Amino acid sequence: MRSGPSDNLDNGPGLEFQKSVTDQLVILAPGLLGGSVARAARARGAAGRITLWARRPEVRAALRGQPWCDDVAETPEEAVRTGSLVVLAAPVEKIVDLARQIAPHLPAGAIVTDVGSVKARLVHECHRARRPGTHFVGAHPMAGSEKTGWENATPTLFEGRVCFVTPQPDDDPAAVAAVQDFWTGLGARVVTLPAAEHDRIVAHISHLPQALATTLATLLAGRDPAWRDLAGGGLRDTTRIAGSDPAMWTEIFQQNRDEVLAALQAYETELAGLRTAIANREWPEVHARLEHGQGWRDGMKI
Amino acid sequence: MRSGPSDNLDNGPGLEFQKSVTDQLVILAPGLLGGSVARAARARGAAGRITLWARRPEVRAALRGQPWCDDVAETPEEAVRTGSLVVLAAPVEKIVDLARQIAPHLPAGAIVTDVGSVKARLVHECHRARRPGTHFVGAHPMAGSEKTGWENATPTLFEGRVCFVTPQPDDDPAAVAAVQDFWTGLGARVVTLPAAEHDRIVAHISHLPQALATTLATLLAGRDPAWRDLAGGGLRDTTRIAGSDPAMWTEIFQQNRDEVLAALQAYETELAGLRTAIANREWPEVHARLEHGQGWRDGMKI
Image 1 (cartoon, each protein chain N blue to C red):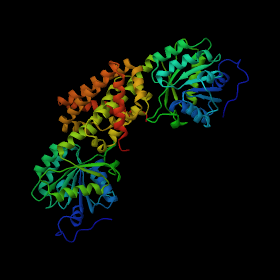
Image 2: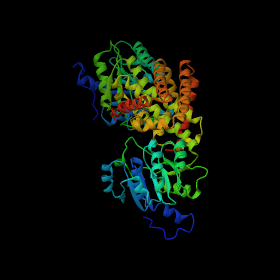
Image 3: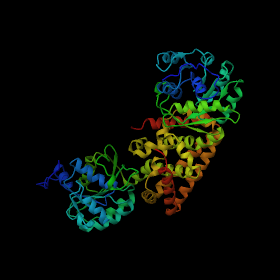
Image 4: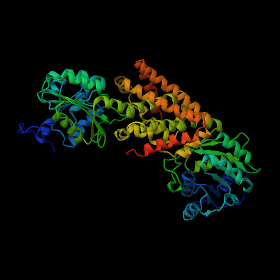
């Protein structure tokens, strides 16, 4: 079910406002996440017309043939000209530039959101770039894969996944609600919180695990390569995300440097505590740590 | 297809010897691994009669009803009296005691193997406990689960998994071959190597990942518990083995203390290297580490 153009925009916020917000969905620089936004929006009838823009001409050509793409624009400015909701799906370090580039070309009332993994600086800068009468409400869907690129996009990528929404205090509540509803409509569980808190949390639950998996992989790469094929499922799971895109993760560590460093230092202290307990043969302490970790893990929602 | 008793044991090592070796399979103290040995041996026709002994009377009673159990003995001594191949499936710290207990009661030619996760001291002690004319050849199937206990045993647990076999230099080659063939017959990929080398390898590919997963879990348990349910698949995979049995892992860290400490120290150095690169904004170095880890992970089978 696609919603057609709204006949009456004078009813104020509410269903009509929400319908009009997703009437003209624009996705800039679609990769795995942006492509999945388009596919999910089409599959779930969560958007009207879907317009895409990609930097590379060959990608624009390929997108033209996709059933979840109604229009392909030649430039970001052209793409957003009639946009009601614009999703900035570029790599995290490119999002601010894109927000600045499109700002003068957005129609009144347009809402911009994004998919960047690190939010505090990005949200601040995108906010500054806004023109009066337009909105920016940051978002970060916690979905991804070792596979990147729009070719791997799926309509179910966001189902049941958390999507953080990180408004600023002076954001228009109706624009915040529209962005929340949009991600909910793609199947995500929306969690709304300040951008700085977001960055501290993802440093621990996403960026730290990446650093640990990569470090285990680089340590073992320096040992006998044949060991790799002797491992059980534990090593396979623990290192799975080490297979992720190095360029993307370099950017994330760069963007969230301070919070990542704090999380790494806390982890090093915790690990040294376990090592010391083993070194000192404090087996009840070792057992207590294993049990504490088990209790936490057992409480995790699948 | 079960193999019947061999008519002629005078042909020397070879098929007849191998058939006779698995004619009377005895499994002592079956948990997940021992139970799966019994189920796999029955399903694959890899053993003749299967006799089990468990410490707790209620487990012995429950085992009597299982189609993969022909006899339940009241004591380890009684269980092994006519055994041709004996599998010590007790927790790793109990295996040496069990080997000493049964040693005087084994028939001539009997071969004993085990499933212990740490091998050097265990193999040395079990070797010393042997009586002339009997054999001990250590083994460690790299199979397991967060689920423990014989009730969770499956006939496919060893399929495609590595099983280490750790002979001593003076072991009878026919006994070593029989143990290798037995584990191969259960579906495992047998890897034969000295016990000390085994312990160094598993410290890195199994015990270190456990320590890292547990430490990530205990760190996050000390933060806001609500964070747990915000995570994506990365944290779930990275911490999966934190759900493993604390008592079992305390014993493993205890048994393999020196190698685990060495692996932990090497990991801490490697992690500090990544942290320093991030702190110093050495982004090409950070990228190189991520790429190095990705290359190692991409080369992993499965």
